Length: 146
Image (cartoon, rainbow, N blue to C red; front, top):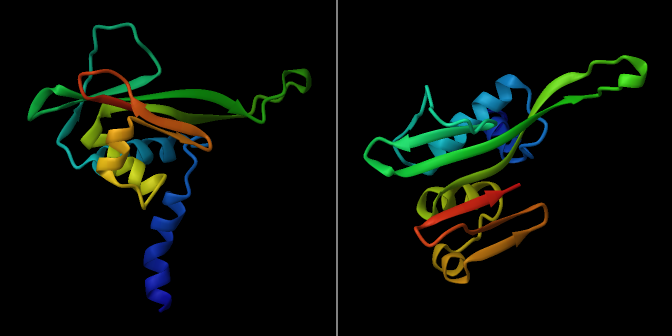
């Protein structure tokens, strides 16, 4: 039983991540896990020609029209300029954009394990306690905001 709890601890700890107070290692691991959770063959786009910052873009190598975009921000946790305290740099994932079938597994895993894939799609949106999951456009792209 102790072994089982030990093996489940990382899963439980990760599933309780709020995506808002990540250090650099947690941020990288979280992004990697989110991409893996889609179940798709996404590859990181490097040397982008756009000037959009604070997001990470992935393209499905099997379907170039299938894009996953993870928007994030950084802040200095504990910073107090009045007392000249610099704080610690933290990352916060704010929104994930992608195809419905890529985002639904993330929504189901981290937000609503009882979610029904057809019901959410038919409704077109779900309002969360601290965010949303909704249709972004008519081309099959959705967004999951935290």
